[in-house]
Image (cartoon, rainbow, N blue to C red; front, top):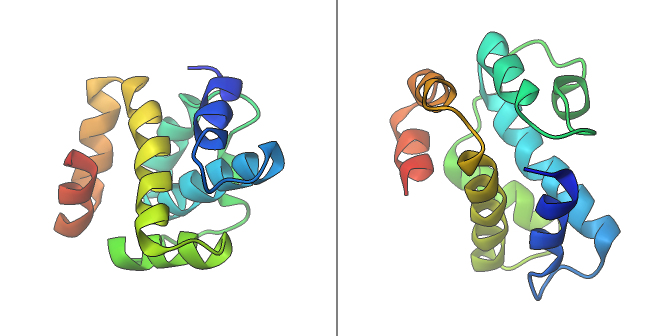
Length: 125
């Protein structure tokens, strides 16, 4: 998976205005997920992402896991990018689908084991 491919897939969504918005959306979608994971799993996940995406960029100085629900995840993305809720879902699913294709089964299992059931169901869909 290349960073430009991920950005281009997001940019191709009809409601994403330009490349800068696509890049910000990719970072936001992955940033919320990385913030929801336990640190070790988040670091392992971030290591699989293409540059310039990395743990520090996506999680920053945040020490504790956020307790955001899947619905809050969608709402946060919708609000940040002024999207309808269905557009936010489409954006999130686009990014996660592309990223998931590049993950090993072990990392996918680690991610799912550390998340509550609503997240597990969401990531499996």
